[in-house]
Structures are given as structure tokens and as C-alpha cells.
Amino acid sequence: MKNLLLSGLVAFTLASCGSDANNQGTSPFVDSKNLQPSPVRHDSLTAAQVEKITKIQATFEEVYPVSLEETLTDFKRDQHPDREIAVWLSMAEAYEKYLANQHRPLHLAAKKEVYSLLLMRSMMPTEKVLADASLKVLSRQEAQAVLALYSTVDQPITVTQ
Image 1 (cartoon, rainbow, N blue to C red):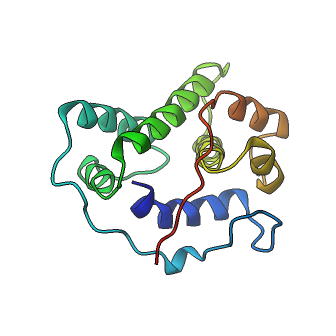
Image 2: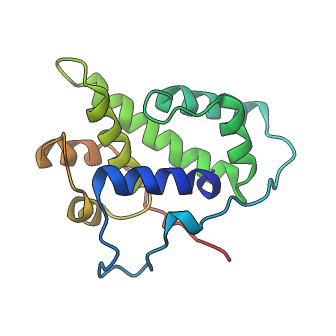
Image 3: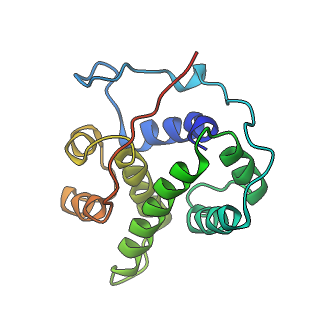
């Protein structure tokens, strides 16, 4: 799913959280305009995978409005869909926990920032996310609270040419 969502998500993440193309990280900067979706690698998904993907899509639908059909196709593009599903389920769990712990409902802009932080966190360590994030809605303490809810090891995106 990262292969196809990456272009939209990177653009969204960069726009909402800011990223320095000249950072000192080990990964080179890749312009999201140059990304192409990989081909569909799996003709079908298991019923269990579809159930999990349906939950992921429903969780993030408000902040990343992509149809279930498109989301399923995106996961079919992944070389290892189960691994990606696990990452996205961890993000969804952290997202839902953070929203549930709020005293009042968050505005859409805040929800998008929570999503963006979790997406970034799925690819890099917390310290790097906090260093790169240009928070517009959430405070640094709120961002730290969001990131503390995500426990999966970051998995840098591999871009193939």
C-alpha cells in the first residue's frame, strides 16, 4: 500500500508537517511528483486481510478519503501485504486511542495532523518526526502524546526505480 499511497501521503505529510529536503537523515529526499505506483502483485487478498484493510480504510476515511476498493488495490500492490497491514493497524490503533482520549472532538485539521504524525512515525523514529514536523494545530506536547501511542518499529520506505 505504501507504494501507491506514498505519493499522496508524502505530499500530504510534507504539506501539513513540513520536511527539510536537506536534512541530515540517512535516506535521500525523493520528490513525490516522481513516484509511480508499483504494479498489482497479488490477484486477491484473504478474507482476514480484507477485514483488516476495511477497518484501516474506515479509520482514516475522514483524513484520507480513498475508497475501500482503491485501498484494497493499493494493498495488492505491496510485496508483503501482511507486514503493511500490521503497520497500518498500529497507526489506526494509535489514532483511535488519541481521539478517544480527547475531552472534546478534534477539528478535522487536528485529526489530519495526528494522522500525518503517525504516518511519519511509521517510517522514522519519534525524535526525527518531532524534529521534522512543522506543527500547525497540535502543540509539541500533544504531538508527543500522539507518537507515544504508536509502538511499532519504524519502517523506512524503499523506493525502487
